[in-house]
Image (cartoon, rainbow, N blue to C red; front, side):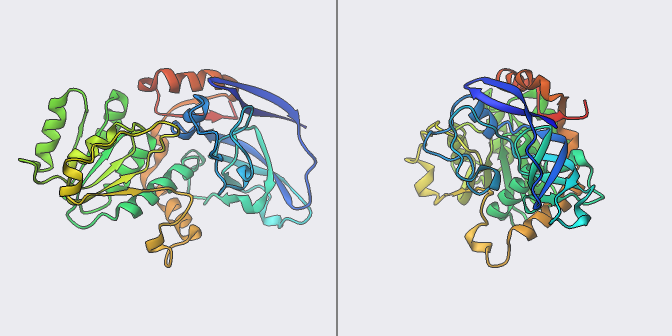
Length: 344
């Protein structure tokens, strides 16, 4: 059986390779994929060659254990498909199940069943393809720990930003604002019904936001700022917007880009905390009560509430992969979430 796989072959280069499927082992299942989602964060860093050579892709995912990030390589971590065949040692209830996998982009996946999550029957497969990003958003909200009446600002309204903003809408906050420069993302954010969406260009837009969150003569500001733009420069804006004793949750991964942060002004005097948020682990302060299965269950519930398939801007054949990555790289204002549709 022939399968089609996406390979990153060099900086700004991808290709589709056809190969013979390996024999199904007794402990494996064969998944025929329906959809897989491109991450416009991590995958674009990989596509652009901006991931540090010393850093493994993701040691916490079985598909990438012991894998380095040198070209050529496969990547992707959001695929949904149907189990087409099972090995002799696999429980028969797996046959025909719709499943989510943290697996590379490909028409078919061969793996152990413990690397897959069964998609609940009441979750649309196009919503399920957002599982990894929604889990990231759940983790961000856990790390931010919003309280009754807090003021929250989310910098960046890409998919992670939109999902985080959608979750914050469920809290009884004093206000929930967003910062985003791209018009398509601004419009999606406004449709969520939040307190306001502002651009960092021109500066008067940020001045208006500062008034909204109560900044006057250096006082006031947001209780929590989520930095999800992928731009290191946004950290200085986050510092400007954060109130005394407030916290900045950094969910962006900058790859090999460095961040020049102005720590000589508000940061020290206002006792601002900068928190690293990374979905591969559970935050230490809640790890006694939360584990991955509990967070997975919460993620499915949030997918049902938010219906993130509304954020799909392009559904493309895997044969159009080069076009898809060029679109996200060169024209981000024209695309939000690009999904490979293996039925196309």
